[in-house]
Image (tube, rainbow, N blue to C red; front, side, top):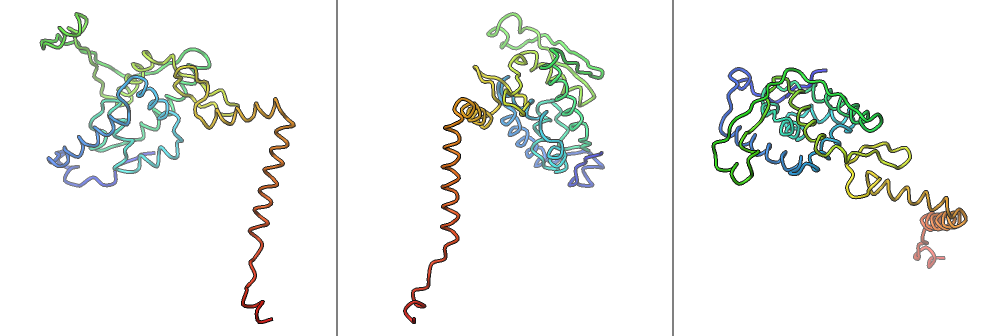
Length: 242
C-alpha cells in the first residue's frame, strides 16, 4: 500500500524547491513535533512506545493526511527532515511501527530483540568550538551517522533510546491488557484506568458479600431513576376542566 501526500503542488514536484513561506511553515511544524516527542530520554521513549502500539487503521488514516502531525513527529525522531515535504511514500512508517512493536514484545518476553538496518555511515568530527571545554574531554569528538534508508535512521534513533532507558519497559499487569509502558517509580499498570479496574476486581474477590450489596444498591438506584423518567406529569388544565 502506498500512502502519498495529496496536496503537493505541481511546481514543487517538478523543481523540488521550497519558498520562504514553506520553509518557515516546515520549521514551525518541526518545532511543534519536537515538543510533542519530548525533550528527555524518558519522554522520547514514551513517544516511541505509543507510536509502536498505535492501532494500524488509525496510523494509516493519519498518514493519508498531507498535514499529519504524526509525519513530522516521525521526521524529527528519525532526523528525516525531508519526509513531510518531498514525495512522501509513507508506507515504511507503518512497517517500522509493526517491526518495532514485535521486537519490543520480544525484548520483554524473551530478553532480546533484533533490529535489522541497511547500510550506515558513522562520522566523527573533532570539535573546535569552546563548548567541549565546559563539558569534559570526552566531548572533544562529535559523532553522528548517515543513512539513505529512512527506516535505518528511525531504527538507529530507537536503538539509542532503548540502550539508555530500555530497562524501564514493562507490560501492564492488568489481566487482558498487555500494553507496553514506560515504568516510572514502582508502577505496574499502564494507566489509571487499568489500576482502578484491578483494584475493584481485587476488592470484590476479598469482600464478595460487600460487592454484592453494593451492586444491588447500584441496581436499585438505576431502576428508580428509570421509573422516574417514565412518569409523565399530568396537565393541570385538563384536571380543572373535569
